[in-house]
Length: 370
Ligand SMILES: *Cc1c(COP(=O)(O)O)cnc(C)c1O
Image 1: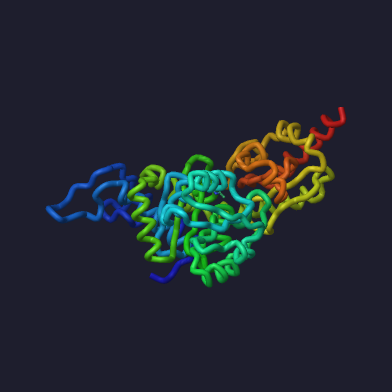
Image 2: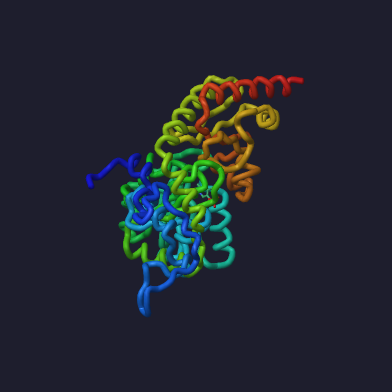
């Protein structure tokens, strides 16, 4: 078969996987145990933690999407990150982006407190050279950063990391492989919170790990089977279903984000807008943080909620939600202040999103004056 585009590939994900029935939508294999044809023989499936046919379809799709050799589906984004770190020995040191998802930072802090690993945080990962130690094992990058939307040059970081023999791990949740393919830029492992854009419907908790290195793939497979943080068959099917429309959704998320950014830049109450020029995520600060409760209260289409990447538009207040575990001094030192709101644009009509924001700001301005 000729190589088809990623859009066509994803639309067909799971089709032609069940020749016996011709099912177009891949079957959900709930069986945990698989009978053996005879002693020393296997159908390729023994026990569902080790391998499951529905999960295999998803994992193949994840590997293709990120242009890797092996993909893994995990029970959450955090378990994907935990899986990636589980391949390193105790006492390893890591260099990580400063502006990180709060849950990743919490996990790193916990590892450090227990004496398993140590971390050095850099404002711009391009400065990794000065942070590298004898026991540095890997560089961990989130780009664009969350919630300040700063981009990191993955290729430049990977080039430096390779000179020091370091593994490069990239959290690609925000851009998705449609806008950025870290493995093509020199990274070794990509992690995702598939709860976000890959799933896309705010109804599924899942994670993904993809590598383009066979040896790393074997270590990840061993760890995943050993620790057991796999994704169950039903959720694998939900994720396959979500990924079929990823290209369509991303187009609309991005178009909506651009429209909302253009509006916010013209709105008097707004101090600055943070948008890297692509994707569906943006943040903004207000001249007066006193407006924030009234704005959140007045919104009708945007839901005040954690998370991102789904068809429904969400608005988040990072300092009390996603990033609450980052100490005030640390987050303020890199610009994550309490006058900042983060938006994940859904796939609604952009005019409705803008109208919703406009009326909320107008109401907040009136409330604040009273
Ligand atoms: C949400 C998120 C995670 C954690 O994923 P879960 O699916 O919530 O466990 C990790 N990284 C980023 C960038 C995220 O947005």
